[in-house]
Image 1: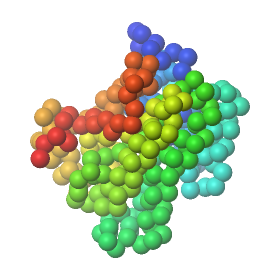
Image 2 (image 1 turned 30 degrees about the horizontal axis):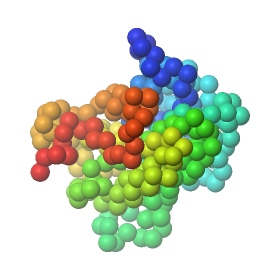
Image 3 (image 1 turned 120 degrees about the horizontal axis):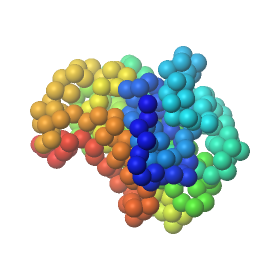
Image 4 (image 1 turned 45 degrees about the vertical axis):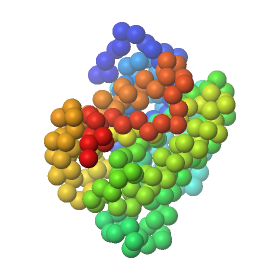
Length: 260
């Protein structure tokens, strides 16, 4: 069950969570944290196959809106925001926690990336966040916060991360530009950079278990991050107490990124 927070710090806030695949997803950790702090949530699921895993989680969140969203399907992003506008008329925060690269593109060298695979990687992993920000802007009349998920491989070459590192670098740059453009309207924009997590998305990265072991051994905290750690850090940034923090890449990794 979702724990009930003693202080409903986000009571009255409404947000969209994109990217819950199952109860191991980073997006699920975020959703739990936002709900525990009193926020009302809309959630999406990728397709009919994913729905059976997401629907019980949406029920646990008491989410009044649950819709399919495959950003590769024309019109589905727009349909979600149209539903939110009709149901709520406003939006306070958005969590974008999706990324994808075709297997042959992800597992090959960056220098060998086929054009189609590169474009698909950038479309899903970066452009979809820009598009969602565009659609969220008119719903955030009183300001709001936009979040996306990134990884250390955007800044440093991480073995086997390959083309996704390129996409995440573009995503982090987009965060800075969006923060500059939307800041005058009171809209803050952040990239959240967790340490390695054993999620379904990460399973596509070769030798991922070795990466987890390395992170635990090197991080100053000597601990792997959990989806709940990521969720609470993300939820804090949606609170008014963080109103002057924007355009940042926040590392939630036990300090791993500071170690050579």
